[in-house]
View 1: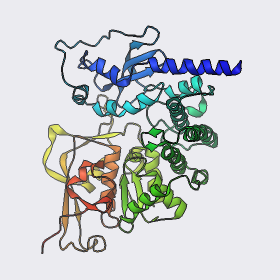
View 2: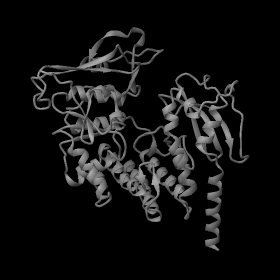
View 3: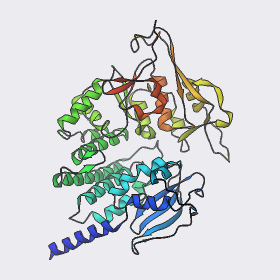
View 4: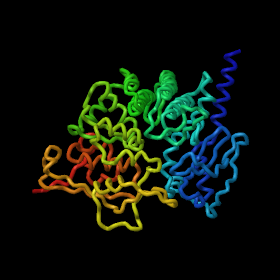
Length: 464
């Protein structure tokens, strides 16, 4: 009888999951029917995959708990699309959906969510992870995709006890999930709750690995995702104030020899005491693993560009490396309203400013304005940084004369961009900057030189 019941549950789950239209179909239907010109200023269009079906909503750029104009787009119970209140396109475009999306300022956000929507039974709204856990954790038989969705839900819910990393975390009336200021310490009860759900995530990925070793995830086969999850927990605990708990996640033999060899090769190509900026999971976690587990090339500072948007991580880097990486002050980047730096395009100067001047200007307290808050502006499109040959002989022995880097900035800089510029300026004479990929930061593209598997910042050397 129990086996029959479990089979019926399994069958219901698979049928229900299969009925839901794909993210691509939903996005296709929206952008070929509706104009988004009416989306509120300071908001972006968001898609939500909920129990009831697909929704559209508008999310505030700076406060992702602030969601307005939520509308049911496709109903699960009625298996049909609903009409939305957005203005209909009069002449239906024949362009591809991707071209239509790329016309919008939040295009990257929409495109990046494609994988998460395809692999998660629910996604795109605060509390999606808890809904997945509540509905699927007790079901004993799940297909591979649903197992991945449950693993991702556990991982996402775990991090919510520390901070709201993706803007989808909920408090759920749990005091341990009440959002902390970035500078507030994380207590032991929060740490233990994180460990509970993080270990649940690892258990699910282990079950999926045993069930289907060839299952493909965004980062590769499930064995890589499984290993990365250990190092993700390690890094999170490390910069959240629990180094001893962190080290317990550096387990032996979780990575294949080939991936560890690749990690060592990345590090081998970095100059002595260099800084390596990474982009994704696979060019970050295995490198941190061989540094911690094997003590390999620990002189290299490996920094993930996405982590530079996390203020706790920035503060940990500042403290761990004894204030040698940043000029920007904690009291500035810990501000709730400090998330982006805009260029003053109305008064854009034709000259340039140095990176030191830029950081010094940001460190100055900005008075509060009722209309603009504490909007921070910088004046020039071009920022410069000079290498002084008196201090750079060890890093750039070929350089005969001083060299000035000229970096062209976009109209705005996110925290990660600003902190990267700060690192470059602060360490210009002590540590050479390297990247695992050329497209990590367009700011430095003109000065990137291939060096084995990686790229390094190199001045245009004098010919004499």
